[in-house]
View 1 (cartoon, rainbow, N blue to C red):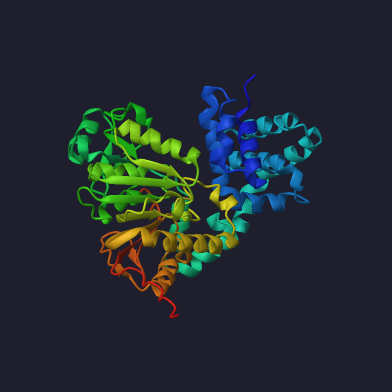
View 2 (cartoon, rainbow, N blue to C red):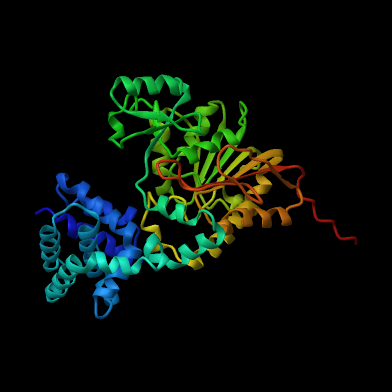
Length: 443
């Protein structure tokens, strides 16, 4: 018997609310239990509810006499999914309420049916008015957790509401045209001939944005490697590195491999080493390389443990796509609003600094390191680079000129744009001298 899409979405979202998983890890197993025709609805319910959860949770607080217990996260998720249907979809109210309440039995919590039914019916009657009251609360108005809403407002006083709006939008589908197989203009013409509306991206010379998302496997030449899915902001890395034939290049924290492949599309003669923490994360990298008929050396290791994976030969270029809060890609992963906490940011900044310190000795003098994150928080970006430059005498910053993004005290920040690129940060460093060797003690 197939699973109801509401129940499948609730189980996945409940795992997220309980802090046990992300939607990316919890949802696929639930989708396997849903009829193929209902998988789109399941995804919409799970991702849409996560997108608006900060607002829906505040509304639920007004509708409930007391909060759910920790052991009832699945029930809480089901209620939020019911509220999402009533307020953000065209599903008829009677169906949204009836089908959602009907899922309570499958959670083996039948005693809660009356509660869920009563709350959803009250939301049907009063939801719009209650939401209007909540508009005075910026966390509710922007549908961002309070810590993140405050951080964005503090760091980006002129942009924070636009950032939140972009985070709440549906992301466009952007392709990277493989320049080894022809020009972007030629591919755009081919898309037009196939009746697919698309436009050239403004900043990436390889970027194409489709007017309407579609199954990419049906795009011209996709299976043959003529295009790949990659946001425009992420596509900027390869050209920022100013690659030259035959260079040794390290792609640190390389999964899922989009940038790894782009490096080799730009300069096929590179000797690329990709490092990521776990072998399971490299599976996707290998798949992408195989589809594009590219080759790179892949190593499963902690990039900070240089002695375990480095062969001692210096790299001319390093791309450090550092682990981060992913606050620049919330629209693609809305459960970030639920899984990230304020304390995470300081810990991530410390990790980013450790990665820079560990990898810097593997870069040859005159070599370039490109630091990248998909975060919009300066704590992980310009502050990390500032601290690194202060403690690293042989490092200097190279300017990244426009036209994209906003110049920062260090590096350049791209903010997520509705119908445009994701949020991303880049800083470009050159090694002008090796670290001084410690003096030998006199006998």
